Image 1: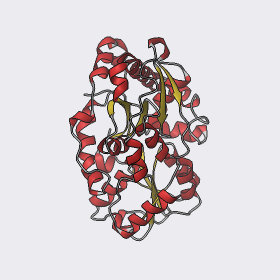
Image 2: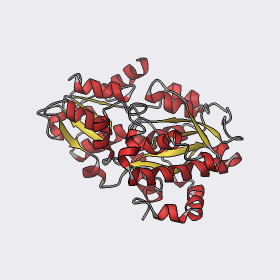
Image 3: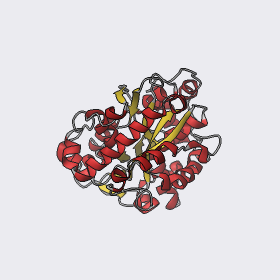
Image 4: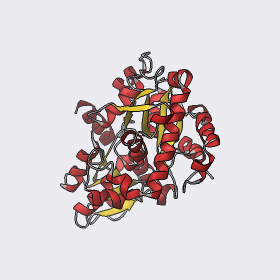
Length: 342
């Protein structure tokens, strides 16, 4: 609560939001990757449908045949997902690319090696709020340094507004944010699928202000697979196994989405099966996101404006080498996919 209180106060007063001290101290850790030598990978993950692929890898053991297994580390809040990864307590994380940038900028030895999901970020408002101008003086719920913060930032900027024109409240978990909106405690929120769909259905008259495509165009990225650099150096085979597993998961989700969602709802998605199935088409899994590199780097400008980054990142935050090797070695699998880089 102390962290969220600080960030809420900063947003209200118009002060630039800086990277918090708990994140900086986490990134200063020199602790080695726990799975660097074995292939038993500890991982953190988000809560949106962009994570469907990594959930299927875990539930269906899709990387095991190639020498990697996943162990998810439970995190109480979204901020803890970033902290554990930055501190080296886990090897890999499926994480919003914006949060990855804060880690990298703060000195964490981490690299993006593949994609997770595209689209699925949604700005939802209470009945009667139908335009960006209607948000003036209202409350917006979101998560700190997240793609779910960048979308409303860019949405408002496009309309000639900014976070100075409303009160931004930062939440700890996806269900907490969704329930705050459904109960009427906040005027609007930017949330991920399937929670945006859940809120729109549960709150009569709720309005979808943006699904991101009106701001960024179709196919914009949301989350990525990032790994500790030590793992890349000491056990690239395990990283390749995980990437291949994600490709298999994408194939399974594309070919039988109801089965894929049913295997993960309840355990990972705290919504009804009906809501998750409805939402699942709005945030597809895409592992090959090499064509999204420029998009992600361009969003860093807004992150720097908000005070999350001291320096703008460059191409060195990405290493698509192992992804490209997996594609080359699994041509039939790759070309069976509906979504890939152009």
